[in-house]
Image (cartoon, rainbow over all chains, first blue to last red; front, side, top):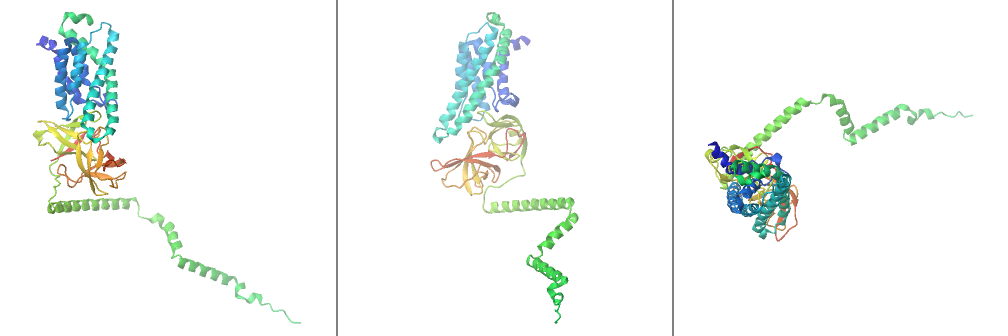
Length: 177
Length: 246
């Protein structure tokens, strides 16, 4: 039983993404905006399991998160699928210190990608209203999200990656521990 | 040799008493013309230590409060009666549901709160949610134990509202920041900063006369419509308990 859980630790962690997305702890926020939590899980998962898995689980997370939010016209799926694909292409680095900062940069860029795609959907949806006032808070949303995601990713992603590799027991990846 | 007659001492204006009498007379004339204001002011200072004290002030304030409560109650009854006559939507305050906010997204793309009462407690989709201050939003989705509320600040929120001072209906549209836009489809609407916005008496989605906010800034007219930013009275990012109106 214990082995069963250890083998599937990454999938068990997956369940907690929507919960932390809903929890939305204010003390972790910046200008009332949170880091983009799903990327912290998607990066290590895709790096270990490759692009195809990244795309599939990007789609799954997107589906769950879309069901939790009330905005029926906009979706987070395209951003997460693109990120899943891109993260899967990234090779792991044995230099630990460099690795930490790489994760920060990658996640920040991923969050920028997701945020921009979401914003574009809102912009196209409200195109007829000529409501360009919406541009300012949205840009603030994207920038604050990028900043926070980039700040927290080195801490969370590298720990999750180590955890996944350690419990998966794959010899090929053990050298990165 | 004729004696010089010393008449000077005999004239009335040489007498001190006459001048005193004249002074008093002038003073009385002044008092008469000023309608006793000098006396009243004098009395003000004289009676100051004996004025009704703080205690009496409290009694009066209590009475005033009670009076206004009774008046509000009477007006409410009157309002319900008139609404029945006009067959408008009725205000129902008897079966509100109190709920706690268990998840709050007020700062990013998604502007929603999740409450700890769901369909099991009788919450239905479309119910109005109010907090201290006024309207927060409407229930958009319910599960067995929870209900999700779309806040007025959400870009997908659109509600009919009423500006009481100029007696005009408008549309409150969330803009993705903390201050939703009020759109009035009239170029000449005399909307001003400080105008009070409440839910529309003609609305079919919301109960009437729920306070919503105050106009914060007014934009230039554009394509036969006027736009204003509204400062909401209820603050969703700090409220922990809300009321769900059925």
